[in-house]
Length: 119
Image (cartoon, rainbow, N blue to C red; front, side, top):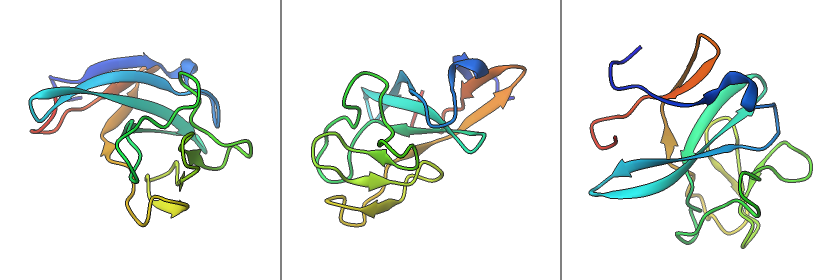
């Protein structure tokens, strides 16, 4: 595991299609909100910003999935994203996906692994 890895949550806090865990990353000289979710057994994380307009996705804190639990949805305009890779699947995201973040699941925990642009 990278030396600068940062704990997001315990593995048990992320349930398939369930609530996400919000956290903050430092990017481009400022703090940005991010979130981690679990989909089909795999943890994934993204910057919490719609591809359509720069607003947060969750309709209530930590609620990112649509009713089917198959898609991430922007609460404001209904854009749909793939929980697997953040791709725009429909709606007003107009082909612009979510910004993925690197996470690693190890020893019962989810860790954020910053890139050179993040901390």
